[in-house]
Image (cartoon, rainbow, N blue to C red; front, side, top):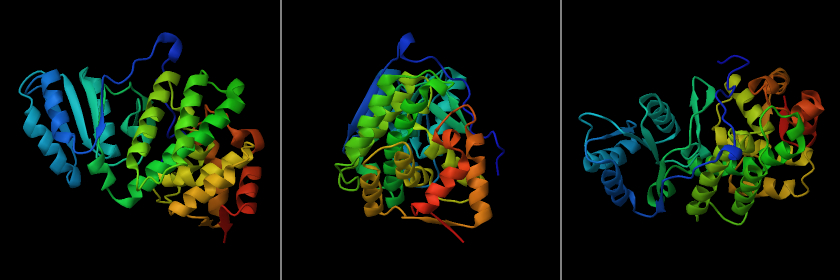
Length: 326
């Protein structure tokens, strides 16, 4: 269980004023993994790419990529992660430490970490840099476990809450505000309300990629991380155990309402229709701990939680049926 300051984002960069690059490789499509692996080989050369992958399902896809690009013999100039969030984060940090390029090949689309400049280690978020490339085979991620698509949808829709909150409290924020980043996050989140992610995972993928790029423009994760993320991180501290994307998605309508977004209930209905819980049950002492500690998970960010006070936020969550106290 982490401490109060777990999750403090380290190493923010300046935003768009200093110039922001886009992904040098961006391959999205069905059945493209093998073709994209050959493209990586043509760009970086044979035996110069280190491929990381997990021990389960991602191993099959990782070994396919490795069989094409070859195991590195000498200088490694690119690190490729094939897998879920932990493998992708590992690759981001390793590439940074080695001075190598990083390419993300997710097998799950459970968060915008597939394309973001943010890496998570020991419960803390670090600003690294935008991946050199992102390759997403829709056939792979579309057939991943149902929870991963639910979590990815929740993570993307939380951008709407985070960016609206950022707009309201930008004058109190310690991070530089970027209108463009906020606009990208709102637009990509709202676009998902027109799609079923299980029938159209490609739309979810593009939204998560845009979310990752928006963070690069902003120089921080703020356009995609607001009060809903604070409560999610606080739930993690008590070992609640739900997936990150499902937690932040669940709290998104609550904070949309508290920030004055009229169609907050449409977002709530969209999520519950997909399978998100309508409420979560907590003991009173657990709820007090979660809501009172939320601010400390990202102490440098001023959100509606700090503006209203955690007691009023908890009261609203109970009154609106998000939290049931037992």
